[in-house]
Image 1: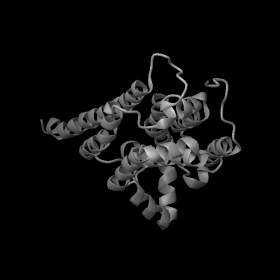
Image 2 (image 1 turned 135 degrees about the horizontal axis):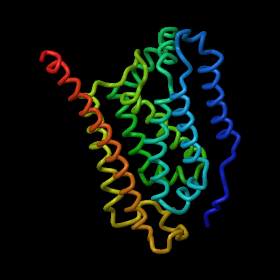
Image 3 (image 1 turned 90 degrees about the vertical axis):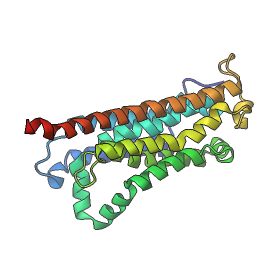
Length: 266
């Protein structure tokens, strides 16, 4: 059964999280004056970055990882939602704009590469593919049975989601978020592109992943087919909530901006 007291303490995971936090602290602290002398300490961004790191570790390092890896498909989908919709959004909100802008001015290679990665077609395609491909039964089972591929699965989802969310929540002037109208089209396209996977998982009459068909029942009343259906519902519900929130906020701000010139003319 699930060991609820087990937390992942592998050196690569813990060391990676701690190194990322240390590097961030150095950049916004002692090196801030060298990067941007006029930039104040980014208190709000630091809180968001901390939330991003905490939620990331909770997703991959807490007992939720073991629960999703060997017992409940729905728990695994909840984990993926954290890695694609919550942690990367906090991470993007935690990056000060002046930090990225300075890197872009100093390095033409960084500027060109980053501009390609955050292009809405590139970032949207990478986000959709990283989500969809890893749910093919063969690759999904491979990730469940191999620590390397499991880590690769989560890393590709997390990184591709950072570039996806950059177009919505960026604080950079060099790589700003998309205009409100484009944000609506962007997230609507993402929502539609992921629908086939949701539909297959939710309405499949057979269990697609053998690991969960043979797993011990953590919740006795939830059979493997019901667990798979619940996982599909969790994924679709999260996707719809995020999409509607972004589309609603973008439409509201877009409408207000469109009405501003009319108000000034009066």
